[in-house]
Image (cartoon, rainbow, N blue to C red):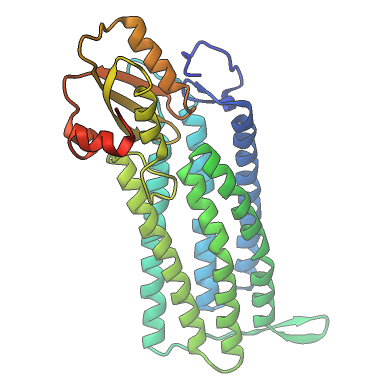
Length: 345
């Protein structure tokens, strides 16, 4: 599972660094790449249509900016997937998995900045009571209010991202891919932007001029929230916090599973795992306190290492560290506290 770079897998899309993906995850990765290309094409069409009908509407401007920002996560994913396929080298002994975390942070910061910009820009227009002019089109000899075209474009832009977002979420969880997860989360929430923009433009048509700026502020708040959430998660991962689930809400279950697996070996008295998230895979240091009188051999340590690595493909890099006492930072307490939580002997 965690063989060296010279092993099978001539197709580079099958690998994360030196980790060859299981067949089901290989298919999931290929599907994720296809979905991201579909997303980019769909966004390009939407951006062009929004530019054509945008006019002076703040809500449409906000929707256009969000669509432009939506290019960042799929592009970051596609670039990072290529970078992390490179196997570890002497210069980069841990591989290139951090490229995914860097891409996540770049996308998150862009969201945060643009969300704040939209709120300030639209808020100033609201305070200054700027009335957005929405003109008319001449179509087949008829004069048509431009707002109808705006609302039609936004209505058409809603289903695609929602469907793609739901498809990406499942794959992101399989691959433990936080860039893909953030992209999927944004896609799922895009219907709010579409609905808010439709309401804003419709409000202007009814004479409620402030609806336009209010809708733009709502979109800005949505972008700001996405940005703040993802910046926090990206910084947490890059700062080497304990590995957590893809939502970032709780400790990843593989931490406990690695410790429990170690305790199935007769010569292991206590075990504590220090696992950090490298992007898709985890760097794992497993500290073990040998039982009294246990004779440690290279074969015994290698058997334990392989047993833990076999738990999950994400445990790419497993190091076994024999110690006389578990370090407190490994488990957040004394060895006795740890073993009572982890079911140790």
